[in-house]
Amino acid sequence: MKKKFIVLGVLFATFGFTRMNAQINLGDKAIGALQKGVTGFTFSNADAAALSKAAVDKMDTEHDVASATDPYTLRLNRVFGKYTAGEGYTLNYKVYKLKEVNAFATADGSVRVYTGLMDIMDDNELLAVIGHEIGHVANHDSQDAIKAAYKKEALMDAAASQSATVASVTDSQLGKIGSSIIDSKFSRKQEAEADLFSYNFMKKNGYNVNAEESAFRILAKMSEGTEASFIDQMMSSHPDSKQRAEDAKKRAEKDGLYKPYVQQKIVNTAPAKTTTTKKAATKKKTTTKKK
Image (cartoon, rainbow, N blue to C red; front, side):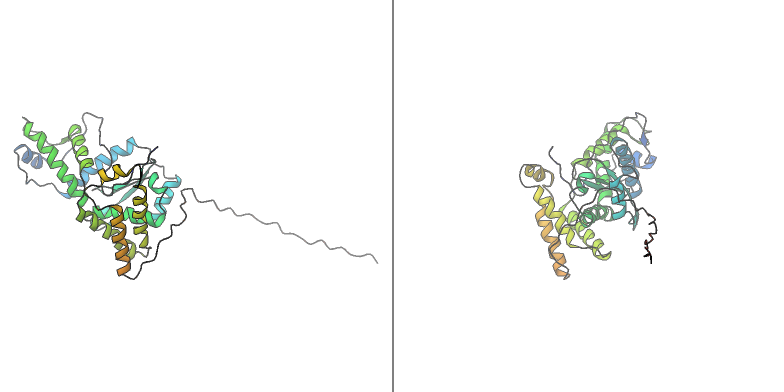
């Protein structure tokens, strides 16, 4: 089976809701403005987070999510679990048990990491990749992306709507917004800033910053050969992995921290249980010579 590759910062799933009556309420004022064709309506970061959370919650029900005791979950918690909050956002982590090489973070702070990614990257490389994803949240790229998708799709529906009382986003609208998010790409500037966020995060917390270069080298290597056309298509508006690896290297060199990175052992198994065994006291047998 061919592996799919990580598209940093892109929400890589379809938000197909099944309950016909499920709705996300964004308020009468916002929807009213949409129905009048007003493009400058207020759509706050809180609205973006609510919309993202609804989509991710549904995705969680449609994917094989690693349990709390699963070795992959234990590893992710060990590597990144202590970083649960930043300026203006709160993070939550889950692992999708899929072979695709992927990870994403959304406007509500949901971080989802695929086992396919965890199988090919060590702890430091994972930190670099997930740090990049969180950079999109911290820099409000994720919020801006879902706002743009909402405006595009909701305005489209509003223009055709004859109702004056719509006060929520319906399942069909969410599906269209999900499709728009899948098709959207972050700008080169946004990608570069997210890369820098990841580098600074690793540097600040005492991790090996050279793992960022290594992570991009891995992706560049994987993009060679049969999957190259797939990568070219998905990353057409982004800096390629080789260039991003070079940029990471230059950052480390400038800080006097550069050293070729050697990938560490990748352990996706549960840690061995420590058992204490009582050693029986051994007595030396003494033999007495008969006189």
